[in-house]
Image (cartoon, rainbow, N blue to C red):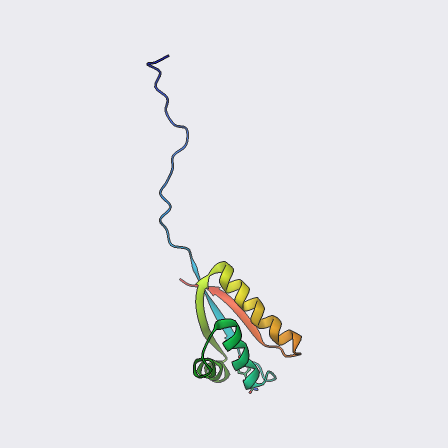
Length: 101
Ligand code: TYC
């Protein structure tokens, strides 16, 4: 009994990989007022008025703009909160998420 050698059946691999990151994108539309987009960016993404205005104008001019980068759950939550804020106010404001390479 004392000289029994047991081999572990499982191996533990060190979990050192960084989580995948996701971009939150703001999509332009023709209906949501600029001030409303700025207010949502400030509220959901904790931006200053100046940062929010710059991001809103970039989406307005280019069609879309990266707002920020987060882990998947946080990106999903913030995109949903922003889109939902628009929906509740009757606007088609849309945030989407996309994995980073
Ligand atoms: N294009 C909108 C307007 O002219 C403003 C706007 C900007 C809406 C950015 C959405 O992501 C957006 N009222």
